[in-house]
Image (tube, rainbow, N blue to C red; front, side, top):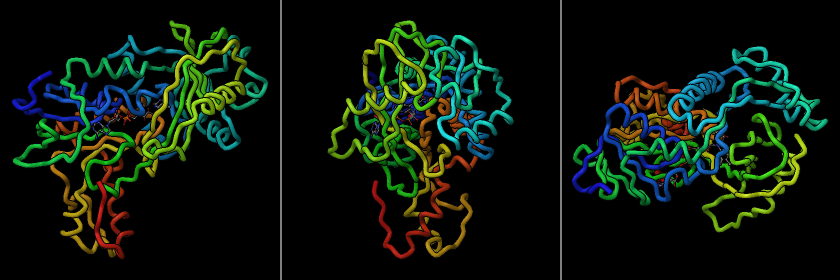
Length: 388
Ligand SMILES: Cc1cc2nc3c(=O)[nH]c(=O)nc-3n(C[C@H](O)[C@H](O)[C@H](O)COP(=O)(O)OP(=O)(O)OC[C@H]3O[C@@H](n4cnc5c(N)ncnc54)[C@H](O)[C@@H]3O)c2cc1C
């Protein structure tokens, strides 16, 4: 391990999930001296639980659809060219699982530039009668990545420190976290407790469970229906995931019921096809970190206390342009990718690199500070307090 006392990094990244690892990889490639910190290890949070499908998001027209479309194309290209060893390219079948989804899918099919075709016969013969009747889209080109493998490969050659980061401090023009020092601090800690008083950043954790199984049924393609089912990999494993549980909170003392989670997943998979001789070989659980408006986050963080001191009337409805807010210096957040962290990470990390290295602005639509003004107004009758 490097002797941290003597090292001043260009960028210190807290959180070694897909967002932290991808950022570390691209910043390191751009020539920055990067340190990566995680309290558990590489891909130990939501990223370690992910099925890591690189699938298009089926959504109606709007900002989210635009961003996800670009992110999906960039991700397919990025993983395939930089990490082919951890990227499995396979056809992808998406079947609607309710009438609203069916409408969305019909609109998406009319507008998408992605190549799609009628479902092929070997795959069709596997489907249950329910799945065969539902609206679907079949892409000849999809992908799934090995979450742990790709994160570890990205972090290779980068100084990694395992500890829980607390109370980051900016003084003498550098950020200090424990004994580490860096010019830029990047927070990519997913749905874990915030490290600074940034209550305005609207995030929620959504618990998910996926399983690896062995089955004598060979799955040739990626299938998304009531759950996602991976193609059979070269070790003979099929991944099934994931549950979406907004009520389970891992930071409370609740116990998670693994048996119940397995039952739910297998029962949902059985609506799509008949999996024979199933044995569950591994469970994965973790939190997705979703933003309140479903858009991902990349950008600087407002120092709420200093901004409200400068513009106290924001609380009473005064509109202030975002460039006038007081920001923490050299501090950037990447977060809020919800169930699409692996799709979005190359997109976000590339724009982080453009911002930090090439001084190119990022889109304010992505900024975590987009939530600040509305949050401040809601606080007008309360004394000012935030919780880190
Ligand atoms: C079951 C499941 C299935 C999913 N399937 C897919 C999928 O198929 N495709 C897809 O694109 N996405 C999928 N996702 C979503 C994707 O996994 C997330 O969007 C992504 O993992 C978010 O990555 P992250 O780096 O932001 O956060 P995380 O992976 O949660 O990483 C945050 C890291 O920060 C560390 N940390 C937190 N606080 C501190 C601290 N104080 N000090 C040091 N370290 C700290 C944690 O230990 C953790 O490792 C899935 C998620 C789940 C849970």
